[in-house]
Amino acid sequence: MAWLREADRWFQAAVLPHRAVFRAYARRLIGDDAEADDLVQEAYGRVLGCDWRRLEAPERFVLRVIRNLAVERFRRARVVSIRQIDALDPDIVADEAPDPLARLETRDDLRHVLKALGTLPPQCRKVLVMRKLQGLSPGEIAVRMGLSVSTVEKHLAKGLRLLTEERARREIPQAEIRSREWVRSARKVGRS
Image (cartoon, rainbow, N blue to C red; front, side, top):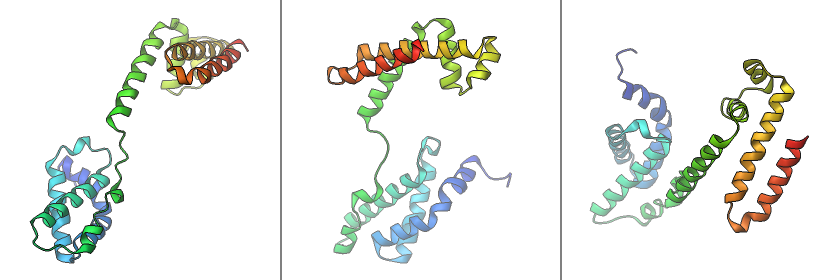
């Protein structure tokens, strides 16, 4: 189907497979099959109207849009069934996305790791990047860098120990004991 737009292909792959779930959820909220279908179609229109490329969990987003549209309809209606209000339980569509504070802490941790990574000796840094970020085995790293596997493992242990020590230096006081144990175990690995 070369004539489909990119948005249509995305919609077909990411949203349409869940249409039965969307319809059942809308029917549960509204209580009427025809109105539930209208609600789902309106949700589809809103989803395609937003920046769909940035959606990490399109099925959860569509469920949230359906719920919000149902709430709008209830607000406009003169009489709303108790059953319909009960169906709007906010825990049904739990948002599993990290909260802003968690995102900020993660960004802060990443910034510190990148800064600490930059302070490592060049060989340790290369080995760590190849092993932890690129997923290469010590044997593959040894071949690429022209080193023995033993040397690669020593660089890896040293790099991890140095990163661990740096992390322990910036840990919060409540976690100081855990950090010290972490550093001690990393030192043991680095010395072996």
